[in-house]
Length: 239
Image 1 (cartoon, one colour):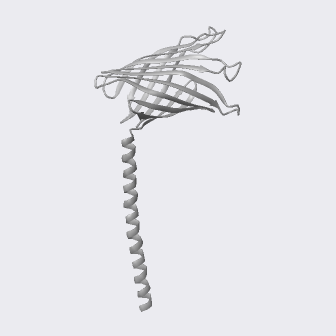
Image 2 (cartoon, helix red, strand yellow):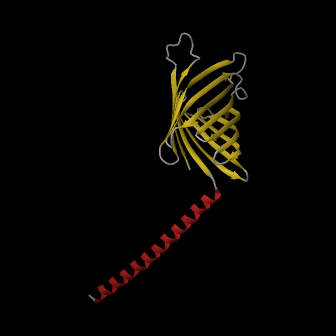
Image 3 (cartoon, helix red, strand yellow):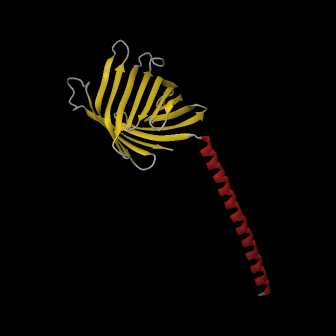
């Protein structure tokens, strides 16, 4: 019995020592995690996640903005089906106050269709994104060139623009008109698509936005049986 009691005491002592060590490790890990979080906050790097569903299918975007003095280095990836795109640009703030915010984001991008092992398929350049907030008014503009011909002699090139103006009714709802146009370039070029409609943005909690766009395609073929009603669903999460 004395031997059993002796070993029992030794086992309890070992358990206590291990428990104390574990507590110290937990506090050390928590301290390191806190330091890492503080470093991330001090770095000022912001990021965002976005998903769209429209005529192209469901697309996924992830991007970040790295402050560099008075400007920022912005990058993102865009994925739809087997196509992946990487974009890089410079964020240029022009005005930043409580009543007015204006910034430009010129970018260049390169796209790969991973269904084939032929390297890049699309040059997305130049690109220019404009963001304006003035009181309850928000304006956003996309201008993009899609160049496939540098990689494929039969590839088609196009110009695309997306523009919308929203009025914030309150902290949750913003509504306004939106226009999207695609111009096909080349010998057989012309206005390939023109969609006119309305957009509503809904706040889905802090840093979450749901966007609903409903529009009418005005460039349908004469023999098309489609109604022309189209649109897009968007979800954006920023941090």
